[in-house]
Image (cartoon, rainbow, N blue to C red; front, side):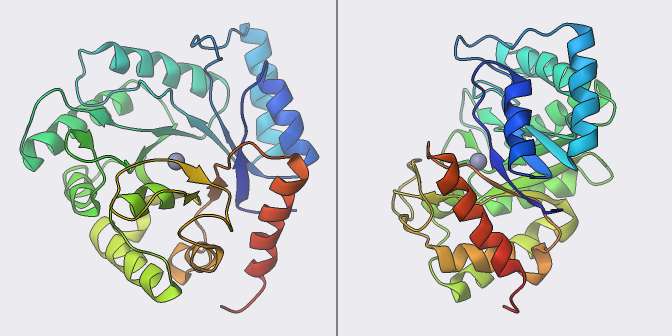
Amino acid sequence: MKSRFGLHIRLKSSLFEALEKVERLQHRVFQTVLMLKSKEFLHMTDEQMQIFSTMVQKHCDQFFVHAAYWSNLTDVQSRGFYSLQKEIHLAEQLGATHIVIHPGSFAQDLTMEQRVDRIVHAVKLLLADSSNIIILLENSPHKDKSFSCSIQEFGLLFKKLDGCQRVQMCVDTAHAYVAGYDMTTPQKMNAFVKELVMTIGKQNIGLLHCNDTKKKCGSFLDEHAVIEYGNIGMESLYHLVHHQDLQDVPVIFELPALDESLEVDIIEQFIHMEKLDL
Ligand SMILES: [Zn+2]
């Protein structure tokens, strides 16, 4: 079934194993990481990468790589930036269509303008250094020195990135909620989407991380919950993924560790709802 709904798949020992799961579930989109538990990037020969890339193209519409958590766009001299450049090359060799990046934390206090300028500079270097992968910048659950939990700050970023083709935002609902955006009813979710679309622009929203959270609105704490047991709630999340302004945006669920059958149940409910007139 062709669908824009998929899972974040935990990398155990090999990417081929992750892709087997995608095929088994008949998903057309998925997300995974390229970093093993040992905190090293996985090792594959050029031939293995070529085979993997061909298989991905055959079975998937979109393949999202989630960059390592130490990635850093706030300082282009940092190890976190250097490592991200390597990771993007690897992702492109593997046929990834997108890379999701947490921009990271600034070492010092800066004005919003200065913060945005630093991220713009880093993004432009990454675009120049890559060929076709789309860079997705994810909103943060943290405040102060992190970039960024604020839709307004992303709005300024996209204004300054005007004309750059391969950069969009990944909107994580759990992160937005703990950062103070109340979305616990369909009406409140509507208001959130309206603010998002008006500030960022519909064309700049490239991915939804449809997650729920155990933490409170405005707590700036990050702990994902199983959908149905979190504070945002299923009804609001349904409303988001089927919102008329977001109907074509792919959706990835970053669920806590669950049995595969439960993962399937959750996604099936969202796909099934797709047929309803909300
Ligand atoms: Zn996320």
